[in-house]
Image 1 (tube, rainbow, N blue to C red):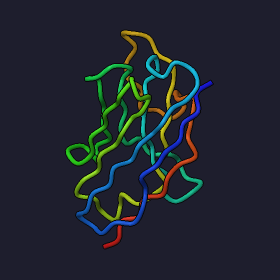
Image 2 (cartoon, rainbow, N blue to C red):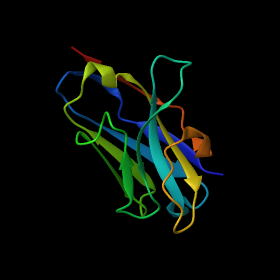
Image 3 (cartoon, one colour):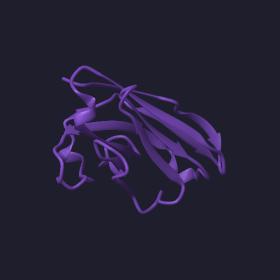
Length: 128
């Protein structure tokens, strides 16, 4: 069982930057692919933001964040980070870290239904 905890959310002005972190405990995190999703407003479907395979460099990004967000991981520290620059008001939402067990050769998933473990989320608010 993997537990995920997100940190780093907050309030930032448009054009600013934030770095989100996802810390994992339990299980073997290095065998998991990890993704970031966001939800705005609460209750609607979660939007895929970025994902990273069990080992870099396999990464994928949502169309709306490509070129502005960068996902990375440190398997030794059991963490995954999401560096966000040039933030826009439409980036506002609750950001969730999620993971699933994977094996080599399996395509990196962007559908939230594929992800097994989820954190509680961290709020990101971008003011105009």
